[in-house]
Amino acid sequence: MQILELLELTFWIDRNIKSPAITQKYQQLQAVIQQNVNARNNQAKQPFEVQKNAVIDEIIDISTSSLTNEQERMLSSFGILDHLGQTGVDKLEGILFKNSLDIATAAVKVNEIVQKFNIAIQRSDQIQTNLKPLIPDYESQEEPENNENVVMRVHFQNEVSLENISDFKKLGNTWWEIGRGIAMAHDHSPEDIKVIGAQKGSIIIELAVIAAIATTTSTIILSALKVADRVLTIRKKAEEIKALKLSNQKLENDLEKEAEKEKKEGLENITKEISINLNINQNGDGEKVKVLEKSIRNLIDFVEKGGEVDFFTPDQDEESEEIEKLRVNFSEIKKLEKRVLSLEDKNS
Image 1: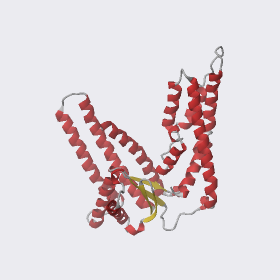
Image 2: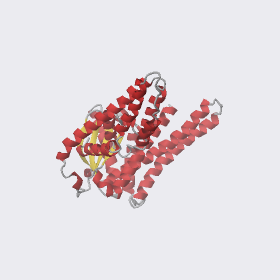
Image 3: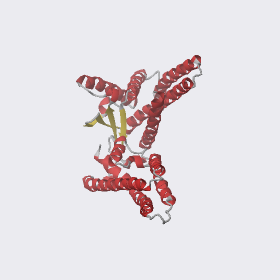
Image 4: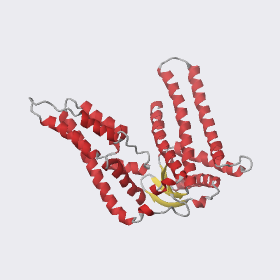
């Protein structure tokens, strides 16, 4: 994770966790539940609907869609990611509902959440205190003149993991073709995409790219996910017909053909759409189109096989129209990835 990326996560925690006093609201809920635990048999139990709703009202609208995958993983390591947004609401209601007759357990579990938020905030504050001096002019930083203001993080994992030097050569060439095609579409060369870092675990290569290249990359991935979503939805209908045991083989076959047609046409249209968006003439820029088409095919194949592409850009760039589009794309990508994974699970 980039230092600036980590620092900005701490600011996000300040805005979304500390300022709304989420920890305190959980504490207030826990206090009422604990009071009921300590109450004697002849004492009336105190309702905690108000405190519960106060927590829910704060956490339900917290979205992590603006965060990078690495930032989300950091929140997960802090232990609080699952207690934000609708997931957090579901968890809290599950605790209170499942333990409605065992309020002592509910009190313990809510207190555990309080402790997780306390520890997360402490760690975030420590990180912010340590990192701020390293970037003293953070708030006044200007956009670099060469516009290399986006980090594109490529995760080699699942079916596209790097196990040996042969994989490295093959996937390195794949990403050269991906970078070349998209760079040429923007009148740049592959050399304009800089390797600036690498991480262990699943192998992660960090690339510095101009915003336009990152935005086009995100647009391709988003378009491919939309195609996958439509294809899987069609296949889900076919599975539902099988489950109903309607013995309509023709309808099942027709739906499968429709799914294959949707995938083929959808992926073909991505190249056309990108070419139109970038004003690439299908006839006059034949070489560009050919290279772009191969780039798109390789990128889609990489993502379909479990590879991941993540984007990070400093908050200072939010005035840029290109950066704003990238952020919107990435937010949509994350939502669609979850939906596609859900559909894949149901179809498997």
